[in-house]
Length: 190
Ligand SMILES: C[S@@+](CC[C@H](N)C(=O)[O-])C[C@H]1O[C@@H](n2cnc3c(N)ncnc32)[C@H](O)[C@@H]1O
Image 1 (cartoon, protein in one colour):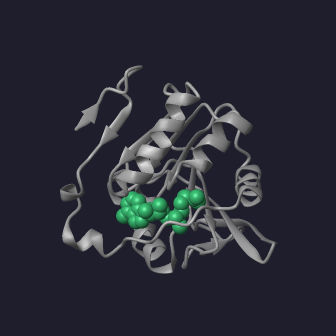
Image 2 (cartoon, protein in one colour):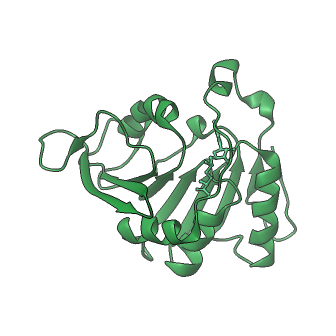
C-alpha cells in the first residue's frame, strides 16, 4: 500500500503482515550509526552524484540524508521494518523537501529490489549478513559497493582473488570496523 504524502506518492508502506514468519527471525534492533562513522562509510564507498544509495534497515534514515545532503547522491532508498522509524524519516524528508531524492519503504529488507543500487549500506549483524549474502550475490549490479558497519560478510574474499567479491578496504576507526566490498561482476539477477 502507498500513501500520498501531500507532495508526491513516494512513501510506500507495507504492513507487518507482509513479512512471513521465517523472515521475522531475521530482525535486528535499531541503533543509529554515529555521524562520524556515516561520513566514513559514504566516503569509503566514494558516494557521489551518480550514485543510488540503499540502506537496508535504514532506521531513522540518517545514512540516506547524509548520502543525499552531504555527498550529493542522486537518490537514496531505505528499507525499514519499523513503521515508527519510517514515519520519523518520512517527516524529515518532507521537511527537507527531499521527496524526489529519498524514498523510505516500510518493509522487509529481504524483499528489496536492488537492481538500481550502486551503493548498499548495512548495519545488521553476523547472522543477518549470512542470510542476506546470497541475495546480494544474485541481485546486485557489477561494481556496486557494499559497506557493512561492524559486521563482515563472511565468505567474501579479499581483493585480488579471482571470481570472488573483493574486500577493498577494512578500516579501523574509533574501535569500529567498516567493511567495504565491491561486486566484481554481474550476476544472473533475481
Ligand atoms: C542497527 S539498526 C541500523 C540503522 C541504520 N542503518 C543506521 O545505520 O543508522 C538496524 C535497523 O534494521 C531494521 N531492521 C531489522 N530487521 C529488518 C528487516 N528484516 N527488514 C527491514 N528492516 C529491518 C531495524 O528496525 C533497525 O532500524
